[in-house]
Length: 104
Image 1 (cartoon, rainbow, N blue to C red):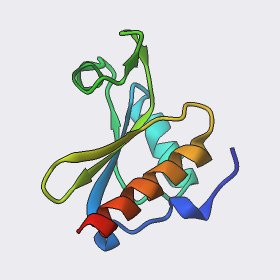
Image 2: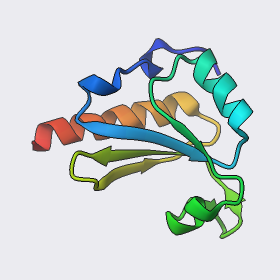
Image 3: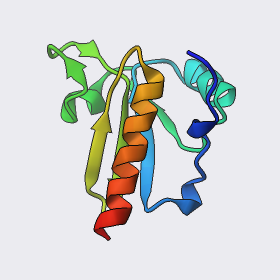
Image 4: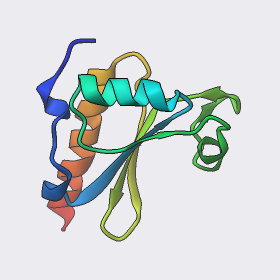
């Protein structure tokens, strides 16, 4: 995966909140966020409790890396997952964000 400046959205300019959640460690999240200059939080769900509630376990046990887009009303407008194609995942997040702007 190459570094991509499209990851650098400023949360204050969005009509939504972006949160990434996976079972990866806090340290791996810190490294990933620093490497890609992420401006949104990454949640480490080691015991997979949040992932169970929000259906982010493939086949009920395999953890996925999911990026959630939550609108101003607290509604999850997108749960995006592309395990290998992280650039595609980010493009999907952008599509969800654009859809929120259009509908408002």
